[in-house]
Amino acid sequence: MGADLHNLLFEIGRERGISEESKEIFRKTYGAKFRKAEEAVSSMAVKKYTFKPSGRIVWIVVGREKEYFLIPEFYCQCDDFYINVVIRRKVNLCYHILAQAIAERLGRFEKFEAPDSDFIRLNSEWKKQSV
Image (cartoon, rainbow, N blue to C red; front, side, top):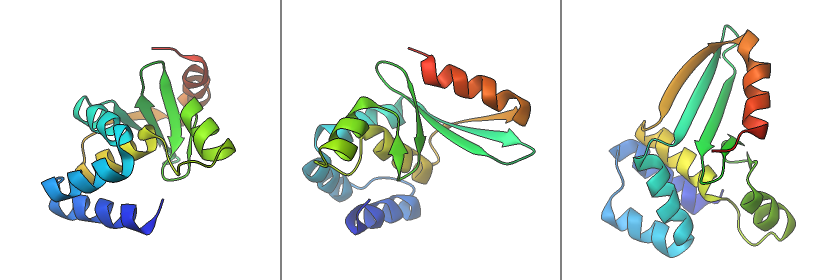
């Protein structure tokens, strides 16, 4: 993620909301990705799983086709990320990563706790599950 995005995300976290000015910058910079990210956040499609007692955290964003595992600011398992970020290097993120970043700053995501013993089973489900 670039410095401009980090500045916008910092502002969102500080204000606990997205100003119209910030929305306009997001729209100009990310276009449809921002619209989809906004929809994901407003529909509570971002999920944070915390495993106990290890404290391992897994972020999931429910997309149109399946639930996508992601590592904030770094990786998403969706095709858009693989094709356009990794292979073509056209963009630096997918809408799932943008949605997670916004949702985390706003505190607008579902929270789940699970025992560490459930991690392998849930991880297998996320890898194959379709919505």
